[in-house]
Image (cartoon, helix red, strand yellow):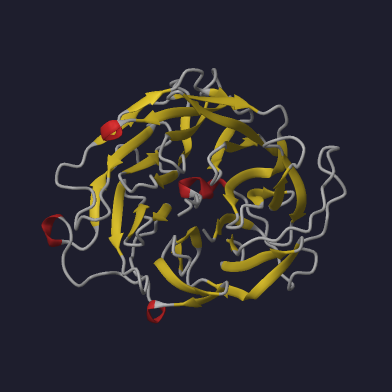
Length: 397
């Protein structure tokens, strides 16, 4: 089962100035830009799986796929009952969850990409989750709240609804909760083997928790939390992801490679019992001023980091990944890819043809890249859009 990283805006959304846009079908969405920093674009006839755009300006979720290089609007945009802040797709591709500021977390069923509000239009949980992901057994919606807690919401794999048939956790509660040291939450990631949860907590670094999807209390009565401080005191942990084969933990960290805001990718091998060991060469410079999205692709041989660059276009920096004789290492690719301003989400489509980026600052809001056919790992921009004010992105698995 592929692991997709569903980026949430977290508390940083308050700092964004989102430009409102009106969606008129898909006219203008998939228009080729004239150029991006002189690099131009590459046309393609490839197709993708479904992906979902969260548009905060209209409080809508919009479904698209790419058919022979052309974007197709799937169904109609769905208006969320309250202002949305985060989005994720369950690994079984049957359910999509949208967290809202005042309404809690809403459930949508997915049928051929079309979305239908479920659970009798009621929120399945009242928490305004800042980041969330469903474990690979489709049994737990793990999310972080603005109250400084990490929560595991039990869900029924066949319906996606809250599983409230019996208390699951301490104190006879339904939702399992453990405290976080850091109250500023950016992203979380569940390890594909469902044994660990990692949370990027800004200046408080990254926290790691034990997790057992098959337990009635997945955090356990003796749940441990280990903290991994930022490399430099001026730094901030902004994004987190786990290698598809559970080999490594990736942390996008502001200030990791020097003073100020120089961005970097920290890499840790995951050992027995969740022990983390930072690999030689880490942190790796990722450029920009804030690595807000990290994406290891499903094949595991490349990892990409999308970074802000002040108010200018952001960048995606790629690294090839090797694991030789138990020695894990990364090599920075020679070419970077340009994005719009303030990239916040990176996902790979379910057909493994595209890397998709959502840029909260616009210019443009959306970018789609294909893998270069001659230079291994290089991303080639194929299309962009500014037809909506997107803030987050999720894709089928």
